[in-house]
Amino acid sequence: MFLRRYDRRKDGKIHSYWALVESYRTGKGSRQRIVAYLGELKPGEESGWAKLGRDLDGKAPPSPTLFDPPVDETADPDDTVWVELRGVRMERMRSFGDVWLALGLWRLLELDVLLDRLMPRGREDVAWPLVAAILTIARFCRPRSEHYIETTWYRGTALDDLLGVPIEKVHTDRLYDGMDELLPFKEELEKHLRGRVGELFRPNQELLIYDVTSTYFEGQCAANPMAKRGHSRDHRPDCPQVCIGLVVSEDGLPLGYEVFEGNRHDSKTLKTIVDAMEQKYGRSQRIWVLDRGMVSEPNLQMLRERDGRYIVGTPKAVLRRFEQHLLEGDWTTVQEGVEVKKIVADDGNDGTEMFVLARSRDRRAKEQAIHAKFVMRMEEGLQRLKAAIASGRLKKEADAHRRLGRLWQRNSRAAKAFQVTIKTLPEPDGKAHLKIAWEKDAAWARYAELSEGCYLLRTNITDLEPAALWKQYIQLTDAEWAFRISKDELRLRPIWHQKKDRVLGHILVCFLAYVLWKSLAHWMQRSGLGDAPRPLLEEMAKIRSGDVVLPTKTFAGAPGPTVRLRCVTEPDAAQKVLLSRLGLTLPRRLRPTPPDAEM
Image (cartoon, rainbow, N blue to C red; front, side, top):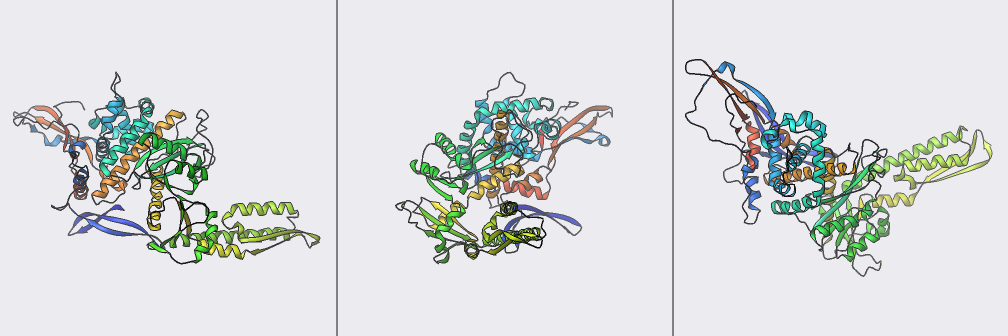
């Protein structure tokens, strides 16, 4: 669910309000519907911040002042000046709301405290924890290159006021070095975030969802031994890449990740991830939810030997073993359009494993459309092949089989839908030296009709109902969404860095930004604002800070000193609703500025 702002004109005035919108699937495609209209926080209603603090089991909740910069609100009541109104102006307008919120999330996760301990201040002008905060906040708010941070982004934000780091101290060399300094503390960061996220949001950390993606490089990356060509999820097989394995909770909260060579098969990454999780958090009977790309008998045996439990997808070919079950009843409805059934396989596993057969109405419609498209393409290709034979352009049987092979390769989803024969004629028939004939395979069509929309799960958890197992497996979409957010919202791809450690540092910064992203999403859920941070961030970015410049004069009318007040713009009515539901109060002033001070 996500936020959408509506503006309505009534009685000559524009009224703004928010609606919570949900996307859902129908037989005619995706649709959207309004779930609720958001008004002001009612007196008896808790804000998301209050709910967040209530979940800490008696610990003191985080203070909202965590989000405010150090401000000295003391002022001399007798310090009165006359202002020359004709000279009042605004200067130095900067983006404030989004970076203020991001810095608050950084402090909420206590990353500043952790890095201050791990990276003590030395003789450097800008402490490394501050550089790490700048890199992560930039990736969270407006993901671009380090060069863009130096030349455009940082000087357009109020971070120099919030962090106390001057603009001239933020440059690419410092940012690159900051990634290098941060990388050695990857394991400490993961362990800290697992504990802190557990305190704040209480995710189920016994159900681990693991998936692998890839991200590609711009450039040859000849000096990076991890950059290899392999199966590209980004449809860029021409570029070298690395693979990233991510472990998330069932709520999508990240628990850890590893980076692998670009040509590493998914199934070859599982043992490394399991070893890493057990080394950090100890061995226990966790439930691993894995996609079918991870499935191999050695992997499943490895999990069983460690007393691990698993719910895994299976290759499509395994479904043929249970063809008779597709015709039988005893299906259980788990949600509208989805049914499951339990299958105990007679394969000598002594009842330690079982299968869950699932079928989805939406998935069936999708696979029917895919099969129909590929069958049509196969028929069109066979007709073109027949025309080439009839015209005499194709005379050799070997050449015809090669063309048929390419046709099968391009339309693999329907390659077995036709039985095709190509023969050389004893005597030419006009211009034709070959004869081609085909017919539809009835067995393939029958099995395709039965299996469309069906998939099979395999598990060694035999004490749960099929519906519960299916619901746990379907959480795998949270890992897929994590990759989508990292690639689209946080711009993990493409990678422009060439050095191995620099690449690993870039991925670590993206991981930290994703933790901030999911933390904000869960905070929004507790506030009744959906779980899509992007609309909220865009609205917060409209809140700006700037200098109110006040020329003064003495009581005698002589020119006096110029006063600069660094203020934050007043949020509009719609923005006040968001801040009220989050339980936050914007600061009015960043810091008092003495007369004639150079800012």
